[in-house]
Image 1 (cartoon, rainbow, N blue to C red):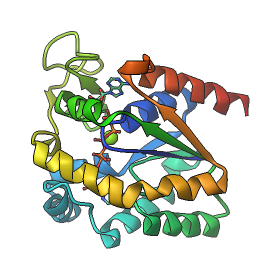
Image 2 (image 1 turned 180 degrees about the vertical axis):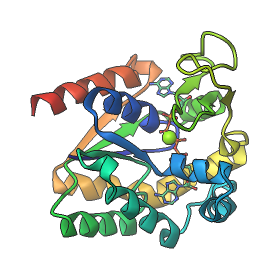
Image 3 (image 1 turned 60 degrees about the vertical axis):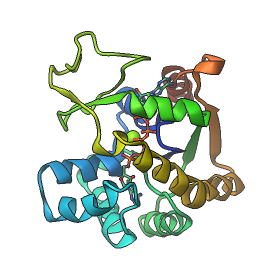
Image 4 (image 1 turned 90 degrees about the vertical axis):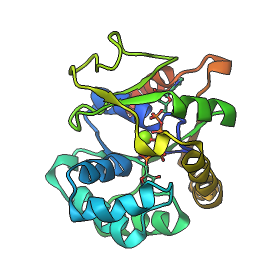
Length: 222
Ligand code: AP5
Ligand code: MG
């Protein structure tokens, strides 16, 4: 099974994908997390990707697409995958369709998360993530803070703020890129009949956990 998480920055793609992954065994493949791991380890890929990520730009397809293909072909995703952060443009979506078709697969479900813009900015500024790349649990200082300040509840590692989350300029640039390049994918997948749109917002009292549990139920019934 191939699931795509679609949605602007801070809508909860990583949060929802993490919960679905925990309950279904589908592997969460976050391109942003892979880039950040490489940046931390100062690999060639990380050094190159950081030139774009720090500014809030998309990493070029020549770097991103082969990296995703390598993961899709690896043993860990043989039971299915939740793509979190890929594709982000029509070009990437078309490439993904081709890559999957060559492997006898297809995209089964696209989960499109929507959240009001002011809520998104507030969530990103108050997001903290576990620094342990094996854990990566996401917290929110307002909505779901850790029990002990600055420490991950699950693994005890230090919580950090992502570099691209710390300034509003980079956040706004990421949102602008979403509007221009990623938002057209909503129509692309709607036409294919595989789009499921979910509003995730404090205003309607519908949080990532509920959205994830509804999706898990549907996956398990299928
Ligand atoms: P990436 O890591 O994917 O970052 P992003 O797109 O900015 O998305 P986010 O991770 O910010 O949002 P999210 O929806 O996962 O939100 P989260 O669950 O954390 O990419 C980083 C960079 O890598 C890109 O800018 C780009 O440069 C590069 N890149 C990645 N993929 C690429 C690609 N395909 N092509 C080219 N370049 C690529 O939630 C946000 C916050 O809200 C958290 O604090 C969370 O605790 C909180 N929260 C979540 N749900 C709720 C809720 N329901 N109520 C209240 N708070 C909530
Ligand atoms: Mg994320």
